[in-house]
Amino acid sequence: SSLECWVVEWVPGQWPAARAALVAMAAARQPLLLLGRRWSLQQALSAPKYRQFAAAAAAVDVASMRNFGISAHIDSGKTTLTERVLFYTGRIKAIHEVRGKDGVGATMDHMELEREKGITITSAATFCSWQLLGKDHHMNLIDTPGHVDFTIEVERALRVLDGAVLVCCGVGGVQSQTITVDRQMKRYEVPRVVFINKLDRYGADPFHVLGQIRKKLGLTIQPVQLPIGEEDNFIGVCDLVTEKASYFEGKDGSSRRIDEIPKELKEKVAEHRANLLETLADVDDEFAEIYLESDEVPIDAIHAAIRRT
Image (cartoon, rainbow, N blue to C red; front, side, top):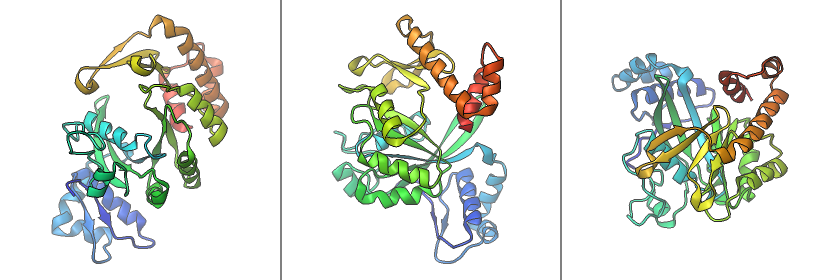
């Protein structure tokens, strides 16, 4: 495969050492192979070919690193979403579609059979970086299969994740494998955000999907963004936290323009923002104090409460 990846021999009781070795690999942005024998962390990083990893790992803030996975029902757009993450973070230079007309295929579908059938069969791992407020954030990303026959791949991936993205189709909503994946995430206590995909398709209704998530998955959930436009007229999103609108323009949406919320959506944004703050106050005591004592809740406090919950 042309993908960067890591392969670690599983040794019972030595996961902390393996995890530290993976941190070193991510810092050096190189594949780390520990095969054929049982390596301790000291042995791996003291070997000549791995010594560079130890030096690089020392300079990386582990607090800014995350392992996260993308899971969903089949054909919800997991691999397509992963392709966009890699493109907008600069890991790849062009976007290729699953079973696209150019014959290249998505980056994470590295097996020939995956490219031929247009489905993900095995979990695929890669990494990317994103700079925010002058600070680098490193993300190890795992794209998992959606088909029920390969659900064991999702199970294996969830064991090592710090967080997950649960993708729901804006048209199909909560489907059978969505329920299975949600159950797996609950079993391993993996925090997740829900991403409602395909809002540019005919019949997409994100609020109907939110209702399904509450009813079928039993999750306490509130949107943090609202779409601007529907179906073919979907052109951007409104951020409920900052109360700003984002439009993605130019080729492949690579240019982001931040503007004021459209007048026709201001009332709707205010309503959903109030619901978001009330829900956060219900589930987070620290935020509840700020919410009850302040006329204007600071944006930083809202972001912090979302992270905690």
